[in-house]
Image (cartoon, rainbow over all chains, first blue to last red; front, side, top):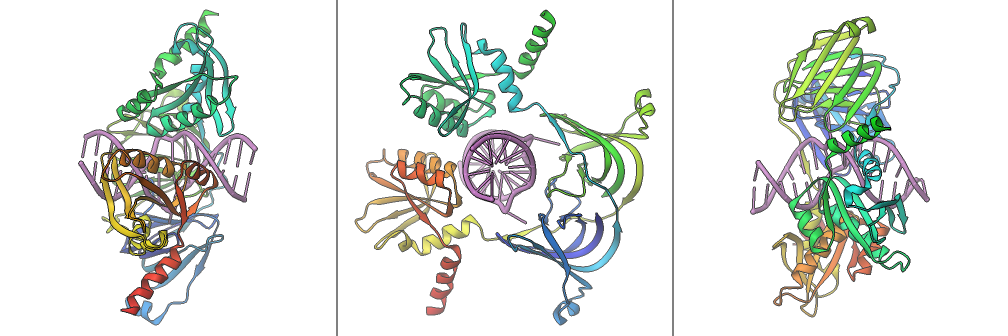
Length: 231
Length: 231
DNA sequence: GTCTCTATCTCGGAC
DNA sequence: GTCCGAGGTAGAGAC
């Protein structure tokens, strides 16, 4: 990894064209050829960048560049798409290299998958007498998060989200449409379950006869550990 | 901006919990309090991070941490959500500070807006005799990209995307449903226009009687400059 | 402020 | 490989 602090301007041509005027920035050149251009603010997204795999090269300086005060010009080209990042360096403030080695990577824990797991184990949260048929029930257009049956044995398709928005209702609607064509399954009712359901999503869901269930993640986790201590 | 290269482990607790085992990494601490943890690979997304506004603090080392070899412990806490990033430092390799100043920011050019502009100017690409009514035609649930009329004067609602996926078809479907309730406009037909249309999106669109049109961006730009040189 | 949609999205998983 | 869905999405624009 090479870390450079320099006064520079940057131009990107690829899916779009973009330009960064001359200013002092951090340039991170990674081992895989990628380049990040960061300012001292904003969030984790760089001002501009080139994704790997990319090739780094020094360009010949044109007379025009030299007159403008450019002392070095980098081109970073994406190996597949040909997208190009061009960095004009006007002044060096720092230039260092470090060997970092490969990273063991991030270990994540608990998101939508965990909600699905918890709800499958506590399916009665959908209503008394409900039973789990299976998680990830496969249909022609993809897996339904949970297939269950109510106290009367009628099929229930459950779509689980962390945040319930319109997209999720549309997704469940497509599943329901398909599943209701299956005579072995029909009639299938829909349940939209999420930690939080946006009003617009709730309106759309209820308009389509889909029941909305708000899941309390902490409560469900508590119930889980409670179950564990009971047995 | 403070740049640190250090052997460290990182823990995040917030919307999810995540852990980075001990390894050598780049830590970027920005002026707004945000922190980025980068490895020497991957794309622009850090392994882990804290968004601004955040507060940086040094934590007291527990006996356990000291025994494990931790020589410094950072806590970076989000001011609003309370999300926390905790960095355990095991070894310093570099630690430097730089003054970068504020950045003039990125100037972008040409994406979906440009496609819309071009199609509005070349509306006959939808078919002979087509005429533009207006761009960004307002409906109760949002603006339709383009409203046009065909050779017979029937209304056409156009949804434009760079990449046509299922979401876009759903969006257009909602607009069509609404517009077709307007007796002054109905019947309204839909056109889904994109530089590239995914097979699943095409299938869904055609199933709903929505016509798909693939736009050739370069060709349209060429036509535009051609028009400019003609007059 | 809220909501909505885009993104040079990135990332992971399934097929 | 391609396609699809999730994201601590972030960021911009409209209302």
